[in-house]
Amino acid sequence: MNTYMFGVIIAIIIFIVVGIFAGRKVKNTDDYYVAGRKAPTILIVGSLIASFLSTGAFLGDTGEVYSGFFMGIVIVGVLQASGYVYGAGLFGKFIRRSKVNTIPEFFGKRFNSSRLRKLASFTLIIAVIAYLLSAIQGVSTLMSTITGLDYKWAVIIAWLSFTIFTVYSGSKGVLITDTIMFLVFLSGALIGVPFIVSHAGGWNTAISSLAVSTTNPGIISWTNNLSYLYPTGMQNLIWAVVYGIVWAIVVMISPWQTSRYLMAKDEHTIMRSSVWASIGVVTVTTALYFSAAFIYKINPGLTDSSTAMIWAAMNCMPTIIGVVLLTGILAAGISSASTFLSLIGSSLTNDIITKYNNAPVKKALKVSRIGMLAVSLVVLLLAFFNPPQIFWIMYFGGTVIASSWGVVAIVSIWSKKLSETGAFYGMLLGFLGCVIPKAYSAINGITLPIYLDPFFIGIILSIIGMIIGSIVKKARPEDVKFVENIHIRPSSEIDVVKDKKTHNLMYVYAIFSILLGLFFVFAYAIPYFKAI
Figure 1 (cartoon, one colour):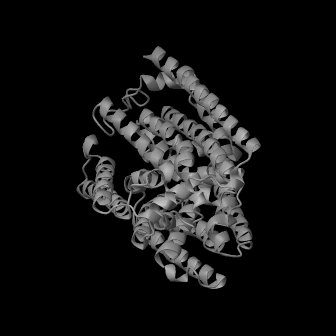
Figure 2 (tube, rainbow, N blue to C red):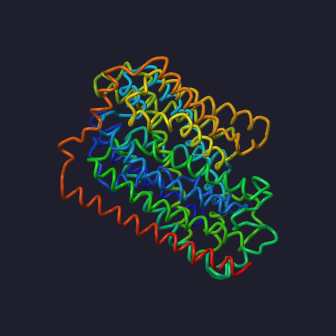
Figure 3 (cartoon, rainbow, N blue to C red):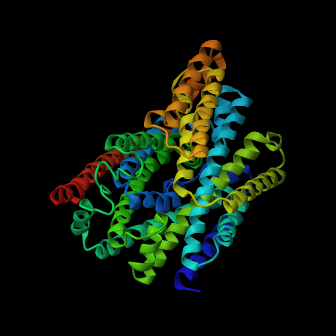
């Protein structure tokens, strides 16, 4: 057993023990689904970031950067983080006022519709299974690489590492373990970066060398490597902006993000968490993306680009720092997997198998746990028999949610004219408009032109479905009343002192944005243009 494997095993044991301990405090379904609606800012921030920055970021995104798509991934990363603040203000605080246990339940309650609730749950399960599969594959790739263990055995260990405590403890365990894991991978990412920079010959030297690279031309230019995705810089730029918007929408309305707001103790917690989560995501991803480009400078010969950060942890850092980084990558994967499994299981038993919703507490919890375990076994089989495709599986899940839920979710909060029929067909057509082209291009092994990206097709069809559906069948008076009620701020949320603190935090966010811009000017643009 090498040191890296030992560190990973210890981390897994700690996560399981903490999760099981948290599960002992679960007394009812409110505790299991939404952590009793009492979570403070630190836990919401930790869970928001940990559930978002999975192995998709540490292995998938960094693999794309290593392969030659630096600027495209950077643009997506910066744009997506803005979704936290927009999502909290436009969607998050309003769904908390509805006092639901899951986001599909919100849609059902908003339009008094069982079929819409089930449709939302079905689309959630499809998208989140893709995400969960990506997380399992990422953790398994990590374990297999550092231990030499057969990939399929690594899949089983990865599955056990999060299934045990997630099935038992539900959202309470997920919130606490997410926060611990977030602190671990934040520390690992930030501590590990200086060692990678040092091995690359220093910051400016690495930027200058990559700017004129002949083995991976354009790796850090605005065009990206033109032989990687699209053959022109403009197409690559459009792709990056489009998917930056896609992921901003995902952050705004996706169940693995907005469900955290259902657990917050008040609306101030939601707004403050969104700011810190946005800052945290940008900080970590920026560090990762530059590191991945520098790893190419150090070792351009990796056959599997998704292992770039793993290779750096084992070859560019002191052993203890490498263990921390690898444990952080493991934590990112396990935290996301636990969130995704919790979401799937909760939605399955709360929104599809609804007959147990009013059952005695022990019976309801038992059904929820069995449902969650059953789903985890299905995903285990998918991971077991499918080769790792971490980045593209993750992007499939995100695009499905953005296309099917994006417009419907925001309009359901801000429009009194959207009817149940409009919402149902908007979500259905958005889902089909994304999934069918995605499946077609995957089966035939083709890359669709950027203007035929499934996201565009899904969004357009979703809007058409909403408009026509709302014309054919108008919104009901009770649906209009629901919108009016959730826009009334509860008296318990009115606090002048808290309002001022929350408002002042927006100034912090503005200052951070300015500093981020200055960083890219002086640490990237200037040395890059000097080199070329």
